[in-house]
Image 1 (cartoon, chains in turn red, blue):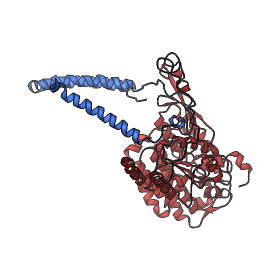
Image 2: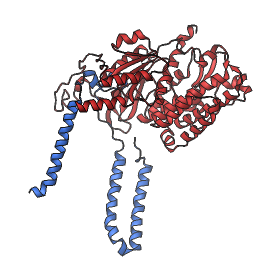
Image 3: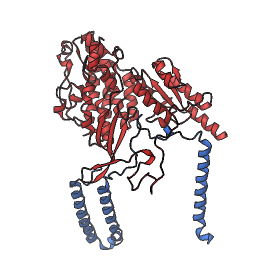
Length: 435
Length: 118
């Protein structure tokens, strides 16, 4: 018992391995947890001891969160922060509710209590019934004759399909998401793999439901209806762009640089333009980001022309920007920046360049206002009451990732900076409802 | 007999003891057996439809074969190294020709896209 007590004491002092399910209104707060040294955000629930439900988690994500909860090793706990309380407590019998602007304190307290034994582990929610029991038939126990003639653990073997070099090999369909850490929040797809190549990519429905109230504080959404100070818009844009860069860097395993980008996003203001430029130069000149991201996620410029997808289009050399038509921006001497790369590396460089430009514009804006005419250049592209850049980019996704290696496919997805909450809120159904 | 195999026997006994100790520690630390939902692979919240036991294409096999072939060529450099000091420039030029021919083979494989991982 001495060994267990000592290990438990060490575990209590260690950073809290947390698996986050971020709903509406928690995208930024969930990312900000990277800045807290007491928290470690883990990619899979098997590594986690605390499940954090942050923001308004929609029903499909709650269902996935239940599965995530049940694969977490004991002792485990659930913390809810800014959730719709009833929906969560109906499904999770024991949940600690975190108050305040940040969930970090509650996460640490719950983790300590778990390790010292003051709080017991949450019981499993799903029934302990094997959905596909082991059959034990056949020479390999696969439940039939021949290597592929059975259904081991009740699951059929992968089906065979022709390969591009004339061999007939297995194609394995795997449902990925909506809580897969390598994907944008909430994205789920049924992916057929051939080895590590994406053979087929079938996008699943957006788990986020249209909620007209969810993004009403977003300055870009407010600018659809009323003029908003340019300084406010541009600082918000720089923040979003830096956060997108941080997600790309994190996916490439460059966590220290990702944390610097998140920290810069938190304190972004006109005075930080030089710091953002320095970080951008350091990141885009690095050998590893260049090698990992160059020629990854290329889209035909013809497919992007007129789509209004902001930095993605401008990284392909298309100078499309709603701001060029705005008299206030023209007064500030705004011109759209472009790149020629048209790949994930170019999009990363483009976002850093645009973040610097946005902070410089914010510094010169001097009380000028823009917006109020129904279309705004958001951080991801042209935003209207019934159209979002994410929804338009999602249509390009299956073609973008099919035939790619898995690592390149996730990097290509990250380079688009998809926000499924935005796609849900700005869909055509919402336009009918008044804001 | 013991003098011959004593070292091997010691390593074997130590390995078995280490394995038993780790199994004991694992048993002591394990709180509860895994439930059925815990045993299912987690792919982001979905339920796997197919068994993960699949035969996929090891696409790097061309590169692996090339590596093996050219790695074995290097074995020829051992006897060459022994006589290099005695034979002098003749041996150097001969090895230079040999390596040049090998290099052409590598360039050919590269052109035929044999170096692609996927």
